[in-house]
Amino acid sequence: MKRAALLLPLLAANPTVGGQAVMEGVMMRDREQLAIAVRKPGGDILLDVRPWFCLTAAKLLKKPFLRGFPILLETLVNGIKALNYSAQVAVEEEEGEISPMAMGLTLAASIGFALLLFVVTPHLFTLGLKAAGLSGGVEALSFHVWDGFFKLALFIGYIVAISYLPDVRRVFEYHGAEHKVIWAYEQGAELSPAGARGFSRLHPRCGTAFLLFVLAISIVLYTGLVPWLLTFYAPETGWIKQAYIVGLKLVLMVPVSALAYEVIKVAGKFHTSLACRLISAPGLFMQMLTTKEPDDRQIEVALAALRGAVERPAAS
Image (cartoon, rainbow, N blue to C red; front, side, top):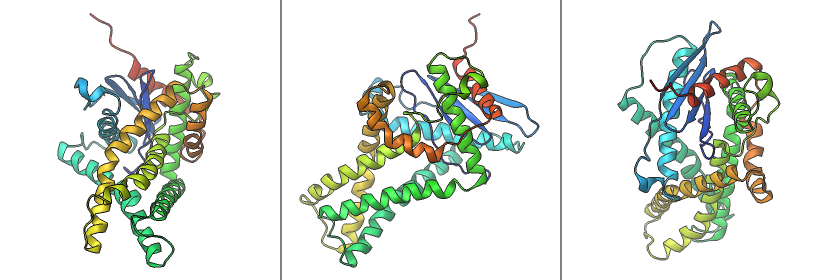
């Protein structure tokens, strides 16, 4: 499994440092700069510092509830580039940077796969229950409750299934290292393997929590909004009606992701409050699956990525 890995970025909030585990390494981002640190087969750490690809330069796209979806897209773009780079370093290939066309196709395939698995498939499963007489139609509450249940079950099942792959388990260990190092940085602790080792491998701003928020918010919104929108227009032909509903769900993913981003920002900023702890609890629980305890060599790589991201060249 050379290039495929689950994208689980730590979405930057306040402070500005976020990150993502990659193949045999970690990517860290601080404001407009990111750094990718990868352990080479020979044991050395290779560090690459580059600008953060940004879609939110315009002031309008920095506003709450508008920034979430473009930030998700730019995180995916930077994450795919980082994964591609790390895969080349980890096996000592020299294929060069991924081309814009390849990036577009990879991004489209990643989004398409996620929508197929977590939007279309649960809808089809629920239609099967309706045919068996175990669920109401698309206008009924029971349809969307079942749809939400299948969506959540597929998400958890997918995480559990890929965690058995050795390459993915290594990514999950680096994921844990990334979180420990960011905790150490945020708490002002010593930035060394010994200083970071004692921190939790779980973090409230993790991309796992973001995905879980997306699923939870989509379940609530679909349950209320889809039946309401069908009162305005609903195609008569059966398969066209189902395709129309799936299309509505796809469009609604934009506001869903925007709302989920604001929730995770609040949860990360006020992570010591009881309310935010309760909000973060399901995401932290899921991170028990998506992170593993790292060793000191993996923490060392995460520290190299952090230093590369936060350090700026001295002004001449």
